[in-house]
Length: 318
Image 1: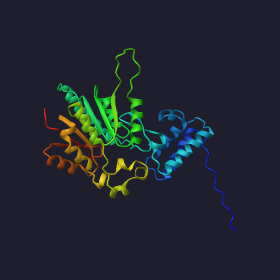
Image 2: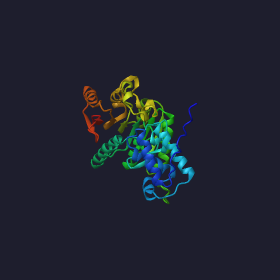
Image 3: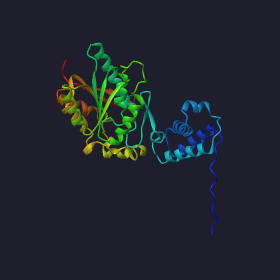
Image 4: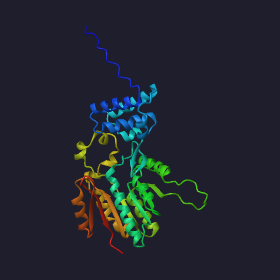
């Protein structure tokens, strides 16, 4: 009978700094690309700190329960659960957004939609026709709708989403980020105005535009554009954990939502209004051709990686 080999006891870190070092080594062995950053985020979360405070407390002694919390998070991350789901938050445009299963995790490239929207808002304000009302198609956790409402003074945003799970995160984010502190002035308005609605986004946009008696000044969208053939190229964190309906294009057609948005332009965009849509990395040329086939001018904006990431077109008008 072969003797049973006793497994070595895991090294017990004595300080926060030692925990970060062990976490980084563990995640590196698991193939996590940004092991250093993610080890800091997870250990900080386990200790109830932010990263800056963690840096300042590297010599802090650890309680057994803190070590247990950190190890549990690291084991789950080693099994490729997304860090944003483990910590429950992800920064977008400098603000902390709550995220979790059922909602797409915000990506840095989506911030380009906000950048361009702000440029449009400044130009409109300078011309005396400021943006008044915008729509966010497929809002997910609400990052675009809420950020636009906070970044563009006076803008009202109507955000639509089919998933109740995702919409729950959006409402929580709006509650956390969009309410101004109490003011003695009884007429003080909230810091931002965002309204959410659940259902078929196209029907909801048409219904609201009809009720307003006009289209929106701006419509933004980050629709699903990944095909099933591209699933194998996705990281397991994305493919196995983020909501499929927010990732994969309907009917395997990455242009599905763009085509529908373009075909309904006269319904949900006011004359002179702008449509901004985030694109997949191979979608730019097709998107421009689709717009031009409908007699529309189109612009493509590249992200920091050089990808034609944001599609822009405008409804003809004043």
